[in-house]
Amino acid sequence: MATVIRQTAGHYEVEDVPYGKDYTWCPDCVMVLCDCGERVELTASQTNCGCGVDHATLVRDELDVRKGAGTASCLEEEHDRWMEDRDEYLRSEDDYRREFERLE
Image (cartoon, rainbow, N blue to C red; front, side):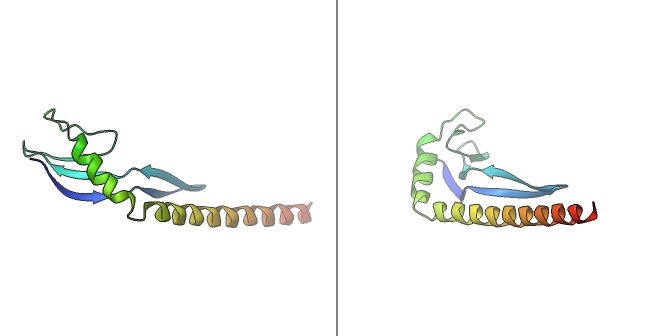
């Protein structure tokens, strides 16, 4: 029988790029130790081990348990942070435009 090693809640990974930030979504996942000895990171859409065993039931059960663990509030916090960054960027752009107009 396969065992769950760890679970990771869905989250955004943020990478700074030259003109802002790049947000990449990482879905909920479960690290499973399969009977074949392989450690596999599985998601709701990828439930098969490399040996061909389907762990869909195990993954579904583990991810359903996590549904009530505050995932929605985590996403709301990420969204709020993104909106604040966006507003700050728009304010700086507006200041830049006004400064440029003064120079003309």
